[in-house]
Amino acid sequence: MRRRLQGLRALMQREELPAFLITHPPNCRYLSGFTGSSGVLLVTEDSSYLITDSRYREQARREAAGFTIILREGALAPELQSLLEEKGLERLGFEGEYLPFSSYNKFASGCGVELVPTGGLVEKLRAVKDEVEIGLLRRGAALADEAFNYILGVIRPGLTEQQVALELEFYQRRKGAEGIPFPYIVASGVRGSLPHGVAGSKVLREGELVTIDFGAIWKGYATDMTRTLALGRPSQRQREIYRVVKEAQERAREGLKAGMYCSEADALARHPINEAGLGKYFGHGLGHGVGLEVHEKPVLSRRSEEILRPGMVVTVEPGVYIPGWGGIRIEDMLLVEEDGAESLTNSGRELVIL
Ligand code: ZN
Ligand code: ZN
Image 1 (cartoon, rainbow, N blue to C red):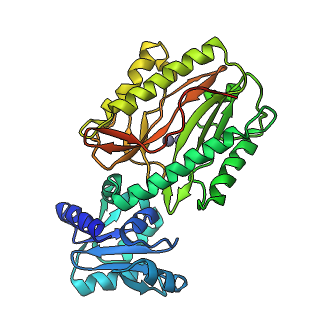
Image 2 (image 1 turned 90 degrees about the vertical axis):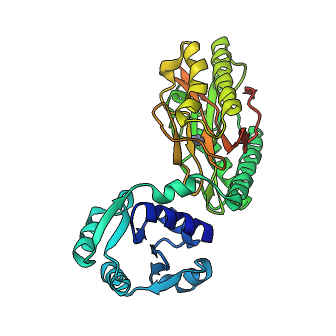
Image 3 (image 1 turned 45 degrees about the horizontal axis):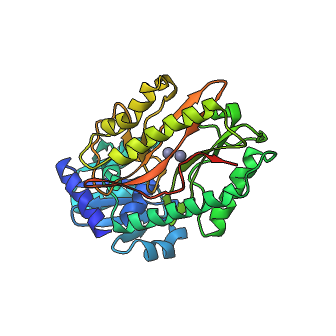
């Protein structure tokens, strides 16, 4: 945690911010360890405060070691004002994306300091994972593999998409996962053309492809993985398009490495899909960072100007979605390294035929 605060202070210095208010819960958790749902952090050059309320008295002391805990009774603005006045600070940075307009107004009239909006400071730190985080993501990814292996023995025509989603969730929660990071996608048959087709009441049928996109939260960290499988003998076209997506995903997995622009990583997978004439059916970006949130920095897309760094954990998830026909996506979580990338999820990528 100390390292993380040091990283933040370096960024604050660069932005000329003597004080910084953190209101986004995953950012608070990242910097302090506090997992409560109500609390903000105030970080200055030499102090760090967790401001919460009496419900979190014990939890805050236990989790946020090194932070001065303030249990506020009234509104947050006057509390902040007195802390800032005490230190003679006149500029306060805040997270522009995570401070509701109504709260901003209260602070603006109640704090008596200059409020400076910032974007993505803590997110920038969070993009590169430390050893502890990598360990948790690795453990979560292994559980996703285990869950996928389990579901292969469960899926059969006649089940609904929702039943498949529930089985996957129960399996992981029984093994200790805290919850799910997003509503699972189980998209069968023609519904496969919906890249975000949340599991519904549709019944799985013989001859369909099924795309399953799922994960879990393991000690705060999200996992995210997708496989597409066939119920019964796949058609020629299903096999052919699967081969293209699989090759695209493999090229990205094998070519990804630190130092590369995220847009270059995207191109690794996009190229073979374009070559096969399917480019217009691959509408989204290659992937995204995964950590305390399931979608975080960096963004791997055609337009992304971010650079991959060692320690980033990102997804690689090319897909082809053809309206009226269906879709195919394969997604893994990769740990970016100096000269390559290691896949944290390792379920087979050959087309599984059930
Ligand atoms: Zn996913
Ligand atoms: Zn994803």
